[in-house]
Length: 117
Image (cartoon, rainbow, N blue to C red; front, side, top):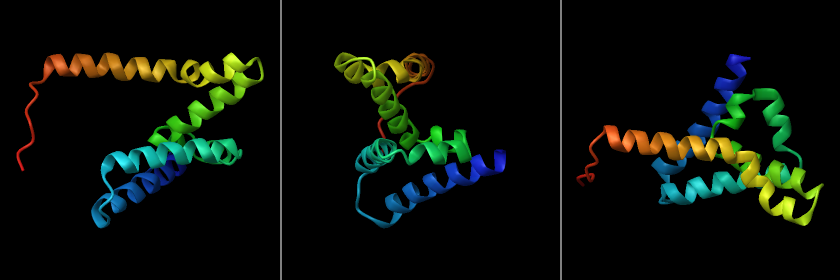
């Protein structure tokens, strides 16, 4: 189980790193592309197979966040139109909250400096 998660998560991160190193695509565009790729693959029902195979190796990278948003919207759409709109945020609420809280804590702990070119 751990080997599959490591292999799939590592492959996703390797692809992103290769795009950063060998193309002129910015990190932000790569991030958005991977997020949207997770959404599109889940919209067609394909990302679920990757999650079933690799577990955290598929859900931890940013494409997994796109999968989570899409799955929440799909589940919410079964209830109502409003559920389709809010379902993604409801599904990802814990992760979003953790990112904000831990980001704030680490911003208090560490001194922020600009990067020197």
